[in-house]
Image (cartoon, rainbow, N blue to C red; front, side, top):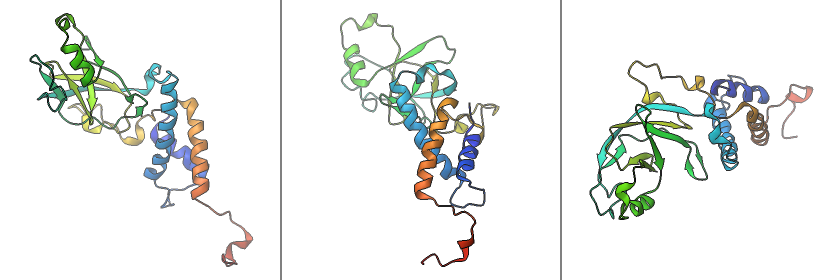
Length: 222
């Protein structure tokens, strides 16, 4: 797969941009790449291909959870006692598809247990059923950048398609820290040509880089 830095260089090459072009900063070029990558990723998710590509996803090895009340978790109607946990800080920004953030898997720190995605409404309906005591499924839901868990757990691992760098979620020894340019672009290589074409078209409409020629010294108003 292509790194973010490599993808920026490729698009720069297409547009004949140089590092001296103030309007073609790395941040600006990547914003264009990211916009079209998201569009293609959503299409791929619709075709049920995206989740099968494990190389696109990265794991946060430890996400700390804290206690919150049922009102914040939108679980106030639950009749029985229920412990609600929430990620201590918001997750890094995620790519999203038709069904919400592209989270591939959430599981326990030791990897032995997997949590099932649900919604507060669905969980309330499950919890209030008379037979819910036989349900051993572990659940989670996403809301306002946080994951919520109606279970007494201290932390989880999250495998997802991250739009943001994961620098703020490094391990203590720093091994998981990476410069943004060194991260993999979350898009299969065989789809990147489409991003290049779309970026070239957009740049072509908004940016004009004149060729050297005999008319360069003429009055542009003529």
